Amino acid sequence: MSIEKDIKQASFKSAHSKAMVNIVYTNNWLATLQMEVLKPYDLTLQQYNVLRILRGHHPEPITVIGIIERMLDKMSNASRLVDKLLLKEMVLRRECPNDRRAVDILITQKGLDLLAELDVLQKQWEQQLYGLTESEALQLSDLLDKLRQSPPESEQQ
Amino acid sequence: MSIEKDIKQASFKSAHSKAMVNIVYTNNWLATLQMEVLKPYDLTLQQYNVLRILRGHHPEPITVIGIIERMLDKMSNASRLVDKLLLKEMVLRRECPNDRRAVDILITQKGLDLLAELDVLQKQWEQQLYGLTESEALQLSDLLDKLRQSPPESEQQ
DNA sequence: TGACATTAAATGTTTTTACATTAAATTTGT
DNA sequence: ACAAATTTAATGTAAAAACATTTAATGTCA
Image (cartoon, each protein chain N blue to C red):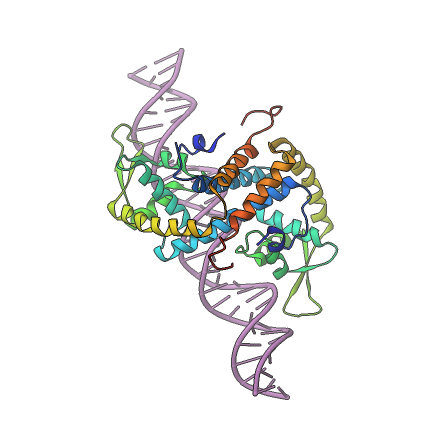
């Protein structure tokens, strides 16, 4: 559905604000769909993201700080997300040998198995939903990168 | 910053998943910036969005259902957001004359004044940040619309 | 070395979200 | 008209997010 219809807004004050609203709207749309896939597995989106980060480093461990650096939402509490995953036996905690302040986190076989199961659903879901061609998807990503670039006259991020 | 660097991921498995991650990342980026602007005014992003919806209908009232229909995030509790705005004297509640189940919500002058103040900041902020041309912004919005379209062989949304 | 600053993770607290339930008013169908 | 279903908004509750503080370990540097 076009965004104008779905949020009952006839027009936007500028192309930029329309794009911005569309990013927020599309993000919510994606998150809602993804949560529906995850719900039967009793995983939140954030827990799923953390698990995928851990798999990306498996069999190497990663510290909580390492997880935060790789999370899209840097604000959420990685320590408590790991707690939840620990209760579900999806991860292991180990004291980091180099730095006793830090804690190494590892994904368990149970976690890997769950992700493997979810990969299938995720793939089906992506194939069913994506209305973009490969090159359009790249173009979209480039435009988003460009959106986040400050113009030259303002200070660097 | 490019998304690969910022989330420390060297590559993505597909153009589509890269675009999807970039949408989520850009959405968080936008939300964080916007919250920084709102923080000194003690408004959350959701409260701000509700206020703007109310202004869009001013001087006509709008019911809670009407607000929900126009919100990007349909799940959040509009009734409680209105409560918060009521405490800040940004809105008024009135029994809806046609339907005594419904409640008419109106933005107050105080609310309008606050939004007017925020409009200036919002505009400055947009001008400073947008690295896209007008036509690129439209293109971005079109690509997002297209992303949300299911391919022809699957069922309608 | 020792004082001070910084870092990593956990914890406390408040607010917000997500989801279910409730209560009242309205609509529907007979 | 009346019972049943639906709609509208509010409320209850548990989980999660946001944000500050704490604790322990490490780094810095005179």
